[in-house]
Image (cartoon, rainbow, N blue to C red; front, top):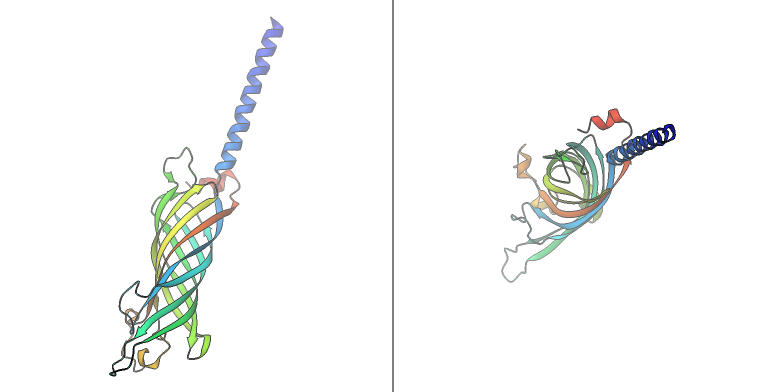
Length: 235
């Protein structure tokens, strides 16, 4: 009888230890990752004095990004992208054809992001979702051609936009975003007749040039959070 009680006690202790280890392991797997890196590509466009409609003469856009996540709602992202501006100069002279022009650009910006849902890997907390829409706003700069000197013109812009994030596998995400860049200048066309030569735009930067990008990208997470206290801040 004593032997049977000892065996039962040992089995109970073993089951409790196994359940505890499984719980600790599961908890470790659910700790969030604070950083991610990714690549994206898509199409871009320009709107300004020479072109007044979005997605007219769209051209390729591609680049990479790094994101640091403060919690399930807030993050900061740094992104660099290449874009080609393409537009047509309409001729006002008889028998003279319209002229198609391009300008290569490199843009680098930092934006703050806000997720509408608590975004993360599925857990017992039903408030955390594997998909969320988000918005972002920040500051960036672009390098473009100044006459015949490529990437010599420095321009500041205000990046803002919306997007959607989807965690389709552990540590992997798909992200779609639509970004608008409002420039604090009017020189993207690289032509004097389309620049703000006489300062008529005033201080309203909505009168200046604008570029946009519609992109899709894939993202990989790294740098897992450590410790229960830090994990609690993600709730």
